[in-house]
Amino acid sequence: MLIRILIVSALLAVLGNAAVRAHAMLDHASPAVGSTVASAPRDVSLTFSQNLEAGFSSVQVTDANGGRVDQGKPQISGNTMRVGLKSLAAGTYRVRWHVLSVDTHTTEGSFTFSVGGR
Ligand SMILES: [Cu+2]
Image (cartoon, rainbow, N blue to C red; front, side, top):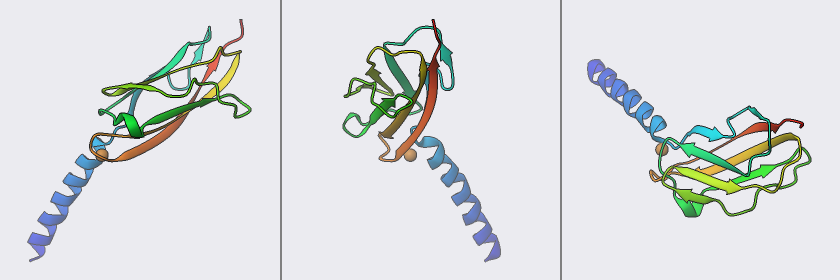
């Protein structure tokens, strides 16, 4: 009986880890997470570890005062989400994303990037 419990726990641990890995996590971004870019980007592009459900995934980009600098509705294709930007001055911007992946799990996160002075 104890052996059976141990085997079941081990199996659950393995399956649990697999489920966590299957969520759509941010794989990479452009501008890169935490980076400083020399000139203002025209858009932010996020690539995830899994395909996204377009209707339930969003991204917001805000300036240091919390004002929106993205152009609204993102374009989503497969595992990438892209949103256009207004023209950015030098400064630090925060990208907040919230996505629903095709496995029906939602994940969210945020990061910053900076635009350097000219
Ligand atoms: Cu998942």
